[in-house]
Amino acid sequence: MGSCLSVQEEQHQQQRENSSCGKPGIYVDSQSPLKSGSVSSNTFVIIPKNIKDLRQSPGNGDLDIFTYEEMKLATKHFRPDQVLGEGGFGSVYKGVIDERVRPGYKTTQIAVKVLDPESLQGDREWLAEVNYLGQLRHPNLVKLIGYSCEDDHRLLVYEYMASGSLEKHLFFRVRATLTWHQRLKIALDTARGLAFLHGVEKSIIYRDFKTSNILLDEDFNAKLSDFGLARIGPTGDQTHVSTRVMGTYGYAAPEYVMTGHLTARSDVYGFGVVLLEMLIGRRAMDKSRPSREHNLVEWARPLLNHGKKLQKILDPRIDGQYSIKILMKVANLAYQCLSQNPKGRPVMSQVIEILEPLVTHEMSREGMIQLSGSGSITLYQVPKDLPENPISRSQLKSESGREDDESCKEPTS
Image (cartoon, rainbow, N blue to C red):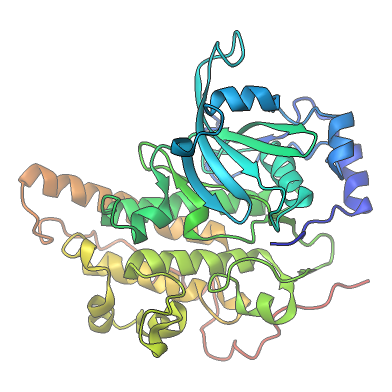
């Protein structure tokens, strides 16, 4: 990936004005009185434009600044058997910070992302992660503990996510199968993370929502990671931001690919792709399939509102774990998120409202099945007060007559 994030002078000036807030950063934690998905009233502190600025003013939220030598000690000198994963940026290593690494530091398991100097990702993407994750705190965003920036070394130090990525659990056989309820819970967790980003004072568009960027802790709570492509959303009278098209093919919204116009609903489309992957158990793009099934969205979306056809293509690993009524509500949600017209997609706060009762009911149903010692799906009947349509007509227009609407309007001067 090339450089994608530019910090405009107007944004930088606004951040200067907001830098007088008490505790820098934006926080929502599990103990907060704010509901998950809501935001605090704080705004961004000053964001460094480049590495030079960062070194001159290293204070950024509550991040710790580590030396390169400390990170060598923490990762056993970046030993190959400590590698957790690799990507376009470089490698991620498992490590531990303890008394041996930094005296007085509480023993903490970490994941260290080391930017490869030859990587297509550069300082801007690295700095974007420091800027965003250094100031944002939410239960469904991976925590950035600190960073190291010495000479040409660029390292990011995250909390360790013991269960790895959603991608590995869905698509690699070495991982245990995700249950139906776990998949719904992961969908809800990530929806809350996106809703938080979209709801901060200067909304943030994640732009790279995909299974490899969703990490799971030991209890399978899901968190968004990798903010290298994140972008400040439209402000004032703008309806979108125009930017170079970046991201991952198969997850990027069609209007963004065609025009470069980026909105929060571009993230909603990516969410719909991942939800579809969890339903079907296939990758968004898979050239090993028959040609008509290469693109998962093009092949599967037309089947989402047809119960019998949908059940034939569902991931067989979740067979017998779901109720048909709940399944169809989740499928309908995915269908709406994947609308070609961004105006036909729900916003993430609506997605949360839809998923929360579904997760609650399926969790109750799963508990009853475990208590009975039976796998029968008829033990629990979904209450009749659940809404028949996840997205009501008052929330969204019907799909027909809407596809000709303009995707985005030009910003007014």
